[in-house]
Image (tube, rainbow, N blue to C red):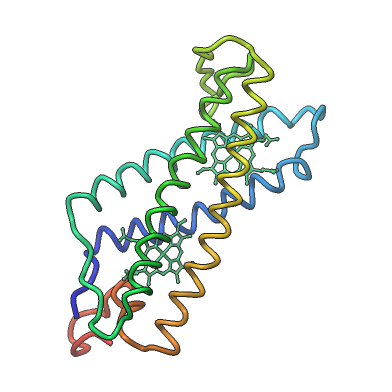
Length: 184
Ligand code: HEM
Ligand code: HEM
């Protein structure tokens, strides 16, 4: 069975798990540093900085993916399942882009701008609270859609691993080291 390449697998797990962490960080922002407390700015800017790094990694990942076609689906996989999986992957990529970009653009319509790991990047847009609010709403909505897509994605992956056992899960899992015979 064909597999994803090593770089694709590395980026899948690195970026995927980091994104889950970033969603949790976003949801907990108000608990970690409530609005009006001294640490609020530092904590929100840490979220912004990590988010920008993740956006760069997502672009690298998508660029790599566009030059390296994924393995073919197994013959046994129904047509509707292939379509559903392909749609899930496209929407995941869309949310992985829209979430950080909307957050970044929103920050540029606020006087706070972004402090990227301590370096102030002056906002390139005017201070427009209404625009900031709309873009931030898009940021939050895209992040929640991402969560819903990840839940469906993980359930699908687990079904392949535990029920279908058709190799779709193991082709995204790091390859066993050499000398252990053919892949699982
Ligand atoms: C892929 C990366 C990112 C993910 C998954 C993510 C996710 C989230 C989530 C789940 C929230 C909480 C939403 C809520 O409480 O309803 C949040 C809040 C926030 N994010 Fe992000 N974020 C990312 C990147 C960014 C970036 C790049 C920026 C700005 C440069 C940013 C700025 C903010 C701000 C200012 C808030 C708090 C504002 C608010 O919603 O009240 N985020 N983020
Ligand atoms: C944590 C549990 C996760 C599991 C078990 C998992 C499993 C998998 C598997 C088995 C594939 C390969 C599917 C195929 O062969 O077509 C895959 C692909 C993919 N996964 Fe995940 N994944 C997880 C988390 C994530 C997360 C958090 C994201 C994004 C936020 C993500 C985004 C993707 C994307 C976009 C693809 C398509 C790869 C491509 O063809 O470019 N995954 N995942």
